[in-house]
Amino acid sequence: MTIPLNGATLWQPLRDVRAMTPRLVGHVVDTVATCRTLPGDAISGDVTAITRMCLEIVGGLLDGRDEVEKLNRLAVAAGGWAREGVPIDTILHAFHEGFQLAFDAVFEEVAATDASNLIDGFRRVTAISDQLCTTVTRAYIREHRDIAGEHHTAVHTLTSALLAGQPTLTMARECGIAVAEAYSVLALSIREHPDEHDPRLNGAVVARRKLRRVQAELAHRCGEQTLSLLSVDGGTLLVPAELVAEDQLDALVEALSRAARVDVMAALVPARTDEIPAAAQRAHELLDMVERLDCPPALYRFGDLALEYQLTRPGPGRARLGELLSPLENHPELYETLRVHIANNMNRQRTARLLHIHTNTVDYRLRRVAQLTGLDPTHASGLWQLRSAMIARSFHTGPSVVADPSGTRRTRSDAQRCPAPGLGGARSA
Image (cartoon, rainbow, N blue to C red; front, side, top):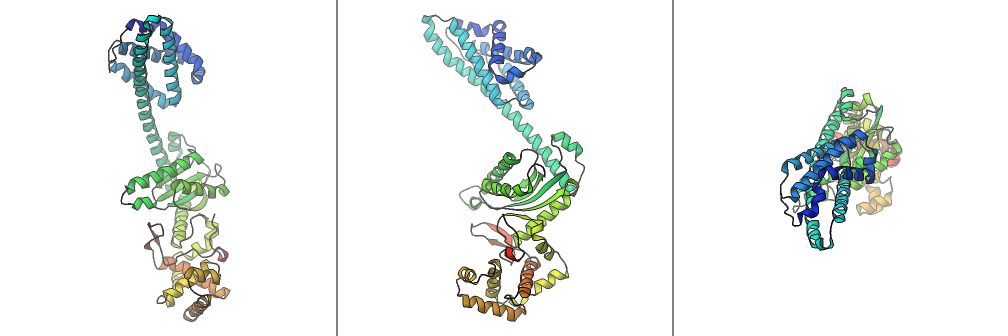
């Protein structure tokens, strides 16, 4: 880029590199807070060298040279500032302070008759300022993205190692993240956003934006100490136990759901660092269970659903429990009535309202359930066995894919709703 300039003698102070460099360095050190904390050798070394180079670039552009080589050197310096963590706003502020002092120096020498040349020159030097700031910002952001990518890769590797039970000391040092003594291990399920199925939109882009919002909210609330492996469908979080108290994790899951703008389901298993692999496996098994049971979105703890978890473990007991409901296979209306009735804490009126039937019909169907299964849902012992059979059957029969009211598709089983909390069901947030 060349910038020819009339009235070039007006801008002689900017070409006098030897005189202007110490003035600019002193001004920047006095006016930019971050620079006041730099050691003397940095000021006399790098800061002075960069200031001199910038003056040479300005002078060359004023004389019509393109100064590509020096602009490239400036870009390299900007990459170094990004690696050192110098804030970009500090860098740009220093540039503007330098140009302000340069304009003051030029104005001191201007006669009234040179006003028109000064105005024309101001416009041209503003273009030079824009070119310098653009060069620095582009290089800074590129380097910053590379650093962020390296950090993301290191964190991904560290998290994978923790989940696999591998040694992590070296990796923790490489990515600068201390490994905590204990973690809250969370398995997450992130529902699909309705827009992911809008034919007018790119569903993959919608899903990625959803994930980025979740990641940004997680970083905002937990910083870099929380480790995660997440996809658009969910994943695993490792939250240091000392960073977020367990009773605050419900609020964290709710915040992630708001950020995603869809429901987020989570399961929690606390663990020491050496227990993370087993804890993650159990958390995802618990999450799979509450999804199969179609529990409402919330954070579920293993202690709340230990009985249900045990009922879903493979074995003859689970198969036998699932068979208790076999007599209802040809009577879907009876199964649905029983399910809704249990889910609503045996409230006849609410069950009737939800199924759009009379309460007498509810009573009749429950009697038919008792006749066919030999288990009376109006008695505590029969109800407990029927509820347990529903839980076991959700795994015995296997999952199916269905559409929820939002129009998305997900996996669930014959058991449509999470059994009522009053009967040993989950405690939701």
